[in-house]
Amino acid sequence: MNWDYILTVLPKFGYATLMTLHLAFWGILLSLIIGVLCALVTTYKVKYLKVFVQGYIELSRNTPLLIQVFFLYFGLSKIGIKMDGFTCGVIGLAFLGGSYMAEAIRGGLEAVSRGQVESALSIGLTPWQAFRYVIFPQAFAIATPAIGANCLFLMKETSVISAVAVAELMFIAKEVIGLDYKTNEALFLLVVFYLIILLPVSIGISYVERRTRRAKYGA
Figure 1 (cartoon, rainbow, N blue to C red):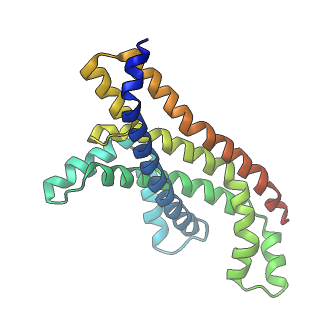
Figure 2 (cartoon, one colour; figure 1 turned 90 degrees about the vertical axis):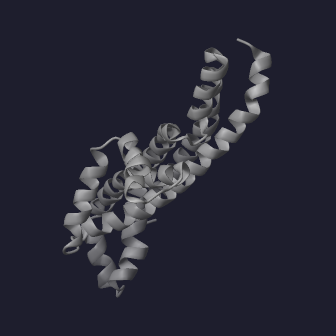
């Protein structure tokens, strides 16, 4: 292991870490928005929209992210729609993550007992108020472990975006291996920086789980 070389390429990996976090942030944020909207459509069986949402979920969950990103980056350019690699990466992560988030949130919504809803309505809450103050907090608490797992999954999936020349961690590692033949050093730094990113997120998700667990009891 060449430690001097590792020190010289640390700035590259630092920049790549920021790019990875940037990709993950927007991908997760958009996937949560898509997930909530799709979960509402499927749970409350919104007419006409339900069929399209179910089709989107099946398409997204049953096609690899790499194919989705290639379609956005190379396929759409053939019909005049050109996007940079970062934009394609964010859209791809949101497209994939949205379906997983939708299923997680739908499971949470369906797990809230009917008695909770009827009790909320019986004390004079409107349907929106019942959803805002009774249904959604409990559904979120139930779905938190699955949402957290999906967030970690999407952060790791950012490595796929290197295929469209986005300088995230995997791209830089492959560049170091290809140009300088420093395989051990590149893989070592890749593991270290992914741990730096993912371990705090994993700990944070566990903390959120504990904090929200009482919500499913209406506390």
